[in-house]
Image 1: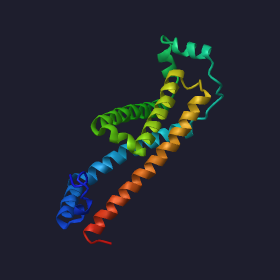
Image 2 (image 1 turned 180 degrees about the horizontal axis):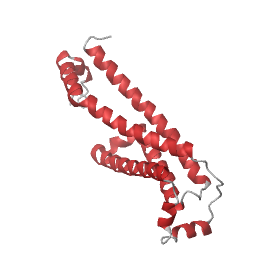
Image 3 (image 1 turned 30 degrees about the vertical axis):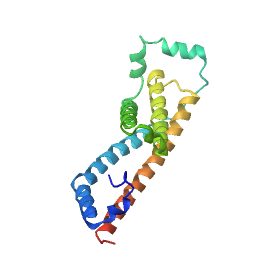
Image 4 (image 1 turned 45 degrees about the vertical axis):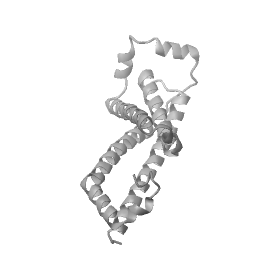
Amino acid sequence: MMVRCNRVDLLYHPVCQAYLNMKWNAYGFYLHFCVLGLYVVFVAALTFYVTLNEPMDHSHLSNERWDNITNATDDHWSIVESIPTLDLVLLITVTIFSALSIIKEIFQIGQQGADYFLDLINYLEWSLYISAGIFTTTTLLCGNGNSYHFQWAFGAISVFLAWFYLLLHLQRFNISVCRRRHSIGEE
């Protein structure tokens, strides 16, 4: 309410600071670390898959080869079975996290409206989750033995964006902790 009414200076009042610290200590700190922990699992799974698997002999994707992949619904389970178990777990982890994060972003659009599009972090998140989703779903569809240039380009982009967003996330945490310490007189 204070921010909406352009009274941000009131947030530095001792009563507001005590209230914000109480809320942070009650559940904000724990919620933040749960979200951070899940995101670190996502970054680790994506990074491990991309770095532990060689891009193999990948080629350009022609229309004929794509038709063969999309028409091979009967062979899909044999393609998935050809992927090693660890790779499959990593791919499924990244795919599920990307899908859930895209759903979260859609809810944020509904909640924030047009203001959502003013924050550049949201564009970073969309780019990250879409590129990771494209990378993992095409790998799941094509199997471990088939690899294409565009897959590894999306993989490289998603790893870079994932680490970049993790640094931004940690930076926000550092700023919020420093503000909390400063407001209660620690330093």
